[in-house]
Image (cartoon, rainbow, N blue to C red; front, side, top):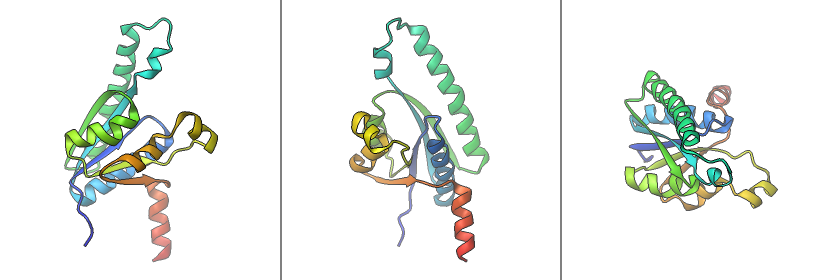
Length: 158
């Protein structure tokens, strides 16, 4: 028997991979009649290297993220997801996506986009996707193809 997922998490960061993963997460949430948690993590380490750091910068980044998250939230509801929430978190994306958010919100499936980093980039800066797939305590679904491409491939095999 296939597992029924009740609380699905999708982290979005504006990348093409995250956009594909969001679309698939919406489809999986609809199929499972699940709650969808859409999160965006603002990496606070990025602000440590800015010499003219001020609260206005954080506020601007937060407002831009909130606008994007409201769009994702409405898109999920319009697509037929029964319950969707969004959250903006501050800190380490790896830690929040793989550990703290899923634990706090009883997540049983994390959907992530496949990384576009090459081997050297992964070695130097690390891949959030790679870390989440290794470290998360719940199931992780890594999306490599757009939803419409998956549908076309399935239809061609039938």
